[in-house]
Length: 100
Image (cartoon, rainbow, N blue to C red; front, side, top):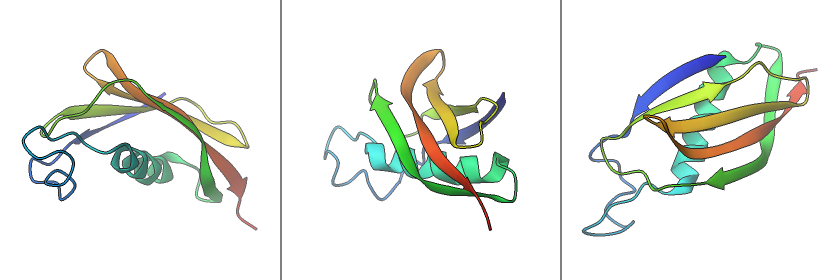
């Protein structure tokens, strides 16, 4: 299993509008980061087609250190989990295809 970390920037541009005074990282930012990190661990001849599914379990605040887990992949999908310490933040899968 591959694990990569990312610390949510304190000044991420999504925070001022999501929610002023009580910032929470939007789920789409978590998914974007999961896709970007998955691309670094997949075989070079693999293309990410899109999101297969995703579930969100708890909010993420500025400065949180997240661990992105990528178990060994199948030919058609890459699963992922996002953790804050031992707490599951989100999970899902990405649809894959070999590059022609």
